Length: 267
Image (cartoon, rainbow, N blue to C red; front, side, top):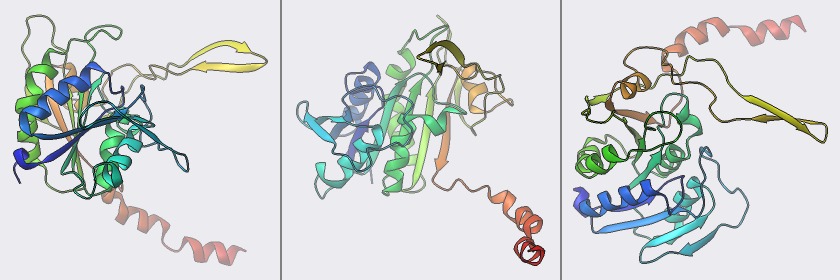
């Protein structure tokens, strides 16, 4: 199938009014005439695959084929693919463009990627887009996302290998005048820096901790996603639903062989 023939659903975790979503919507509409926006009514960053379990989720129309969902990014996908779009469903879910990278340790907690995992769970391939902060703080330069998303989207769609696959795309934030170093397909790493959670004054005899930047962007190894984005590359990381460490199965079986019988005998 060509992306021109696709029904594309756009979601994010920053909310339907976020700048990054408008960039992604513009890019998707250049690729397909059948584009739907089903995004959170408010910011839902860091929600991962959380869903409004056993709760009512309200959906608010925001124009033609645009809906604000009063719930999580995963709720948006569940609602979109199980009733809102009708029996036709969707061929592709795209998420983002997130304000901030989703690299390394971010993958498990990211609502941007969590929405994509929910789509993949339902048999619809998905692509997450994220834009790294420019410099210190949360200042954003959207130049990479604006210039690259539209030309990359059809190439990424053609590269998808399976319905239950997710691609995580991260844009760098080059310094003024610098060019993007290139595009690399790579694995996710992890942040090697120390935990930095701030404890704040107690409230009514309860200790208070502020969780924000858990670790600094120090990569654990060269050429992982975190390292390459810092060096100015666009990174693409294929993600899957199976979180098993297959390389550990044989060794784990050996180490645990006979454990239960020996425990029973000890009793």
